[in-house]
Structures are given as structure tokens and as C-alpha cells.
Length: 302
Picture 1 (tube, rainbow, N blue to C red):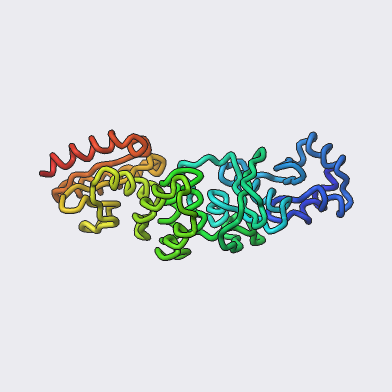
Picture 2: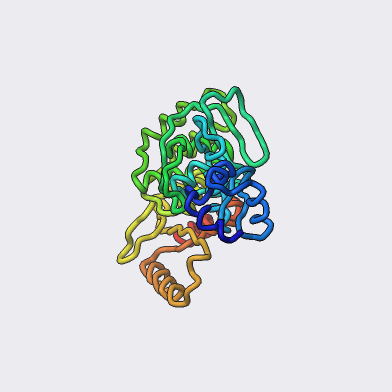
């Protein structure tokens, strides 16, 4: 059975191959099942296989998206978070268990195990930005994908992707406005997504900064992003104050020298008369905690 691996590797496209393609190459479906049981290949979705599938959840979602697109070939494209990942844009606060697809002639939304298929109302492009994708695959554009993700997931999902797309030059603000306008009036959640996308800013450099901006807008805390103070650049300065807000993803400080450098930076900012507040994911998910931290800092800086 291992003799078939080079043959199957040769017909893989973007890390997957179909049962039909394997059959045309001379590998019967029963042989594929035997190879699966032997641990030589993995079934990604029904009728689609991979020799070396990834383990990272986002990469697994990309592979499943590519797999469904290879199976549902007729005018089908990735949508929502599935399209965002294909555009290599960040996806936060989202369920990656469901692949989102659109098709022009879909009569209505169809939900099947593993994917949802909606009527296509957006322009489709092709993308090979994700590292796993060598051959371009169809997806709605980044702006439409961000709006759709905000509707299927949360407004922060839309904002984080939009900020990154603006930062990378994939979209301009007018693209986001047009994408929102294409959503039928009365669509559930579009008001919250529209409000979130009005905050989109290309100066933000991470999803955590996007989340910080959204929460602070809800708390009526005006922010100025990416401010230079002496030799340092900080994530945010609360407008009209000497309070600095920094998003702390925690995972970025695993190296001891990085920790020392960060402490030196923060000590210098405090010596310059600033109060530094660090907000983490858990603070942003519970805005009352973020509010309390900010209020204490404002009192100290007064």
C-alpha cells in the first residue's frame, strides 16, 4: 500500500485529493480505505483525503475548506471565517468547527454536517495567501468575508479581520462600507457589525489591539493608537490623559530576555510620568474588569 503514496502525492492539490482523482490514477476506493486504516492517509471529509494533514485548528479548517471546495466544485466559494483564513487574515472568537460556503444558485441556506452552504450574493475572488494553499481557490473578498464573519460569529471577529486587511493593504475603508451595504436590510446582527467596522483602523497591529479598541469604544474610553513616547511605541494612549493601554497576549513573553526588556520599557514609561495598564484576553471578554483597571489608572494619573 505504501507504494501508492508517491502516486497520491502527485495528484494532491493544496494538500488534498479526491476519491475520483485517485481512481483515475489507478488507486481504487477500497485501497484508500485500507490505507486509511493503516494510518497512511486521512479522510478530511467524505470523498476527500490527505497524506499529511495539519494539526493546528486553523490549518485543519483551511484543509477542510479546500476539501469541500474540491468536492462541491460548481460555482462554490468560501465565505465568512473560512474565507478569512484562506486570505490569511486573523480569526478570533470564532467556531472553527463549521466550514462556510456560498453558491450562486443555492435556493436557501443549507446546513450539513461539517459545512453550511448559503446563497451567493457577493463578488468572488481567488486566493492563495494561506501557506497551505499553492493553487488559488475561490473565496469571497476580504471585506465581504469580514462582514459575513461578524454575522456568523461576533462583531470582534469582523473588526480584527478588517483591521488586518486594512493594515496589509488588502482593502480600503470604502470596501468595508460597500460590503456592509450589500447585506440585506434587517439581517440579524448587521447593526452591531456595522458599528464595529466603523472603528476599523489600519494602524492596529494585532487582533488583541482590535479587541481592546472595541471594548474601549463600548466603555466610552477614547483611544489614540500606536503612539510614540520617547524611544517606545505603545499600543494606545487614552486621549487627553497620561494613561497607556497595552494589550498583553501573555504568550509573547516566554523568553526571559524579552521579559527583562519589557520591564525596562515599562519602567521608563512610568518614569516619564505615564500610568501603564495591561489588558489581557480575559479582561476584554469581561468588560467590567477592563473598566475597573482603566478607572484605577485614570485616578492615578489625575
